[in-house]
Amino acid sequence: MLDVGAALRYARSNRARFVEELSALVRIPSVSSDPGSAPHVERCARWLADHLRRIGFPNARLVRAGGPPIVVAERRAKADDRPTLLVYGHYDVQPADPIGAWQSPPFEPVVRNGALYGRGASDDKGQFFAHLKALESWIAGAGELPVHVRVILEGEEEVGSNTLRAWIVKHRDTLRSNAALLSDMVMRGPGQPTLNYAVRGQVAMEIELAGQDRDLHSGQFGGAVHDPAQAMAELLASMHEPSGRVAIDGFYDTVRTPSRRERRYMTRVAPRDAEILTAAGATVGWGEPGFTLYERSTARPALTINGIASGYAGAGSKAVIPSRAVAKLSVRTVEGQDPQRVVQQVKRHVRRVLRPTMRARVTTTMAVPAATVETSHPVMRAARAACVRGFGREPVMLRLGGTIPVVSTLRSALGIPAIMLGLALPDDRLHAPNEHFELENFFRGIDTSIWLLRLLANRAMGTS
Image 1 (tube, rainbow, N blue to C red):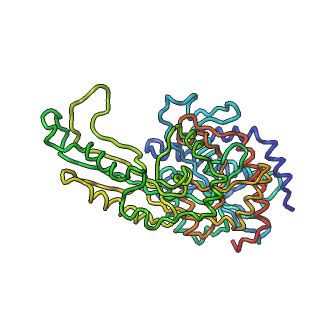
Image 2: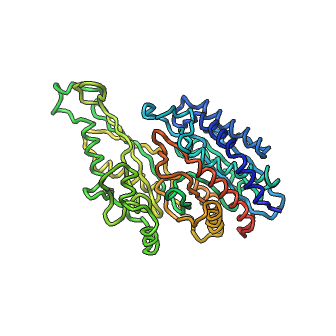
Image 3: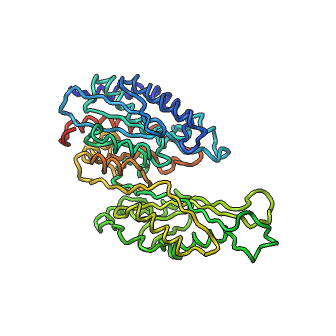
């Protein structure tokens, strides 16, 4: 018998311990983008594998596939005819810079005003840990899992998930499941459960311009030699029209615009322009005309400049013409756009606009397609019902402006939908100093996940 009450009681009586364990996890500085943090990434993976074994997954192990370890575990329900749920999360985190902007050290987690502060508390350690605690609550509280479960935790989501995506494709036959569950996104607001049904893709690129073979004295050569920093500024400025629309040929040719019905729904439930500007700390919006700020940041593609480096940026002045300039770009793609085609469009634009005084090198570090889940899918209906049980109200269905690389891989390689349950709040400061995770959402996330496992056991989702 599937005793959901026993699982819920176990979870609620162990909340204090759950927070202590989450704090121990957040304490590990598993920054995947920093090669110097590789030992900490390894330590975090080992911590998670050990923890999974302690909560009822004796076969939890580390998979070596070329990048940071992938933590994998499986446990079957007692009834063979139950569906299989794949639970995903990522244990790597963003760098904590600037350290001085934190109110408390980023890797010394502390609870303040009902929230756990620390890098990774919300993105994504706290969110996926809620699902692990739900699994523990079923095993320890009720004695069994309602469904078969596979757990996959990766350590390089923040840098593109290249290892995991290749590993899933290679092992697609042994990873067959009926649905996936992940939480790596934000809620609409406090107390408002949120399910995401679409994520944007991402193309990450770096452009390097080189002029002369060394830095030059700007008094001796200024006006005679083209400045790579100026050339980069001209090139980047050419990528947008004054209106905010991307000015790269063919960029919008295959973009799928949401239906009128979906746009009406988004107008009713999505954040208003003023709310988005407040969350961004901005006063005036910008971007493609004809769309709300929410639509621009979730349902429409965007090109952003993530960083520019050239010349001297230290204290005082230095009269030089730099020999090179580098810019990092991010293109958020939507349904209908092929990331590889976008790469070629950007490269053609660079060749067309570039002055003959410059040599360009364009490299691609990420190319992940967008993904959408049908809101009428049975697992989505189960997820909506679980949200009502866990939060006490119906969830809103929203698009996500960010990119979760594994979502498109789960769809293309395994053919399964992803239940994307947001547990973070818009002001949890993901990727920023003073990142935190509201413990109320942590606890409600555990309860919702407990109910989801129970409800999925009753859904006809095909053969696992």
